[in-house]
Length: 284
Length: 106
Image (cartoon, rainbow over all chains, first blue to last red; front, side, top):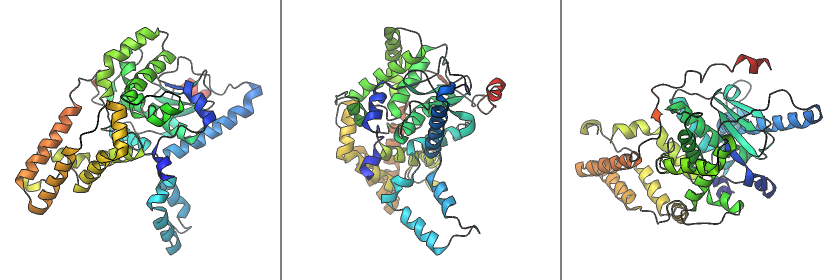
């Protein structure tokens, strides 16, 4: 289980077929108006919305905090039984069950450090989306949109949140001209495809894209182009040209990870390095 | 580089050991080949681990110099490519502002 938990798993086969076409788009050209689901789909809307909210909560909430709340006695004191439970559940074998996704944890910490602390209610929205998009970052409102009708499992939610947080991180740390400079959009999409786990070997195999030597780069290019085409009314050739122009620079920009996080182990190491950055830069 | 009096290795020695161990793993070989199309180079992590331990045991100036040089080279490697965009001096002004009123009313 620990091995399986290391990879950013694509989810069950049924969901994977949908994921084949799913792209995370940067800015929605048309967000469906909130609060106006068709009467016939009201029940489905609220069910999907609740599922989305719960999965998002799981992605964002630090599990140790959740465990702490669960174990706290009414008097706010820990008992010997509770202390033993903590000791047991801190063991390595239980970590995958309790750990907040390390990709998300690092991104949230990095954004807070950059002055963009993320608030779940303000910066996330679960909505129905057109087409096969999984999510998007709306730069005009600084909000991440999660497509509740297209995100089916927790693993997928974690990956979509990571992808969109990378866009949000870029928005926070740089003057990104999302709407007026195609190269900026292309750069953020290259980074998001590269660093979110979208193009992991396992995910590509599940998409029936077989390739090994340098295939990661092919995947990043292709998915960046797909994401651009999802939000811009341009030809594939124009999108490809923009990706080609920025690829060298943006593929090698690994902030805030400092490396390409191939799985959760790399993401944990990246988070460890992020927490150590003061010592690091003071001693080189 | 910080003054020798207050200096310590940029990373704990255990971090160098963990990086070296990860670099030499079969999984990392696969990931690296999948991304870069070549085998990874792990020797520098081994040298850094040795330097770190040497500094811990003997406070060797040569070990300190070697570590600093190695880490500065790593930082330089990350700054090799010019950024596509200009970095901000401060976060976006509207990041923390409430959502537009018409959305809230809906």
